[in-house]
Length: 113
Length: 114
Image (cartoon, rainbow over all chains, first blue to last red):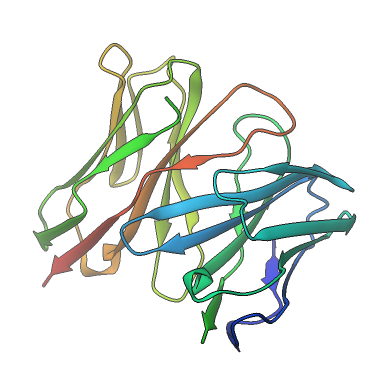
């Protein structure tokens, strides 16, 4: 059974803190993605990685960075958290190429106060 | 050109009715169009997908209709049930490249009343 896990379901951080969101997949997928989900805005792509140590900016990369040292793990880093980064963060993975399902984790609800 | 526009934002349907959600795109290079379903507290999950070489795909009560010339595609849920109440996202992507990401619409919240 495919599985994408995220390190926390809920997280509360203070403005200016460095925040790490971790994502692990057990499907040996090359591609991994980070999205943020906000009401009325849908899912917006922050970063994706098509292989270990490879990364590409998505639509809204400002204020974020990522790390992928191992195939199964993709980390999203908020260098200095701000209140406008309060959101639901979703990680996903898939095999490369068309027609391959993108599997999502359950999400991390991050609140920055 | 990279956008996928989804409507309506919310939808209320009676049990047994037909739910219809529409999406439109601009980029003619898109060649894969999935629909995702998301229940509260869960991540989105693939519901059904279509490629532009067919005009319709049906899986159970769920059907995608695709109009290539109009650059539109829609999800039809027949005999809608309360268990179908969820948020639905259309998406699109192009090519067969290793680094292709899905582009999502803004979502439709469906409520099926019993």
